[in-house]
Image (cartoon, rainbow, N blue to C red; front, side, top):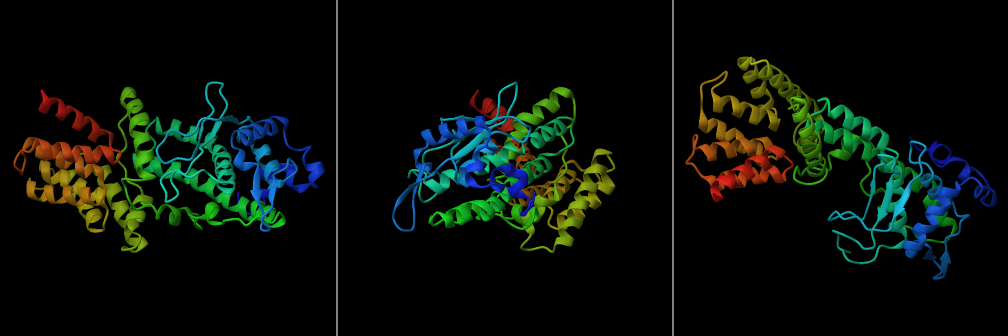
Length: 390
């Protein structure tokens, strides 16, 4: 939802009424939960205004009413609960658990900064409110995420496509947060003499999802590592049990994120489409056409096309077998962040095909693929470790 409709549609009547009357709009359950949040995170209850005076947030303040309203409705007409325990993931200062099995969605906010220059310092007034509202907006994406997981469980998405679909939901939450800051929090801060830090609210937001996802170029970090790991640990085992092949398709957004600075958008799309056609031909065992398409994709900068071409050279499908060429292509894709290339290169070192057999090198490559979010890399590494350590 874009700016202009946010105030009425997301927060309901609370912000469209005068302050005394607005308090009647906040749902009692949301008010009660927010009172507990403020009791457990006392830094949210007071702030220092621009005159140096300590002031209290009241239950008539717009930010209190907005949070109470959102705590009353998780996007599926359900109440949101609060947990006083901090998030347990390394760099997360806030998170939420999705509603399931009759249990309501639950929000958690930590106590200290993580993974930044202020690490270990207590979370301040504004950051705590920002974390709260982001998770409240993100919770509203949960119904869409449930649908996404169901679709992935019948083979609709590849790992990359699942990552893109999941992060698109997160992008929507950031859009809502940015709009909320501009329409509600900044005006509240101005009216109450509080000097706000806009960067805490809109630091990474971009006009389009494609521009936003292009910020994340490292395939070994967020969001590719987080959602890739989720896909491989949660979706892939389900597909395996159901006998459904895991889709191998790449996705445009990943390729754009990795090449947006170097390659025109039209060329990126053409290379991605060529790789998709190559996968289709490969699945049909039409290796001659697969070779042509993978070659076109790789030459266009598509790293998935490069390891696909490497597979054909390694097995001699559609082209004369050529291990040195396969090694070159695997190395190219692996160095560029395509974890399948690392895993296939590990196979060559494990078996001594085209290179001197080197079990430790194979383990290192499998480990890199594993840490890059490829579940097959984890399996290959662990299996080889058992052999080496036997």
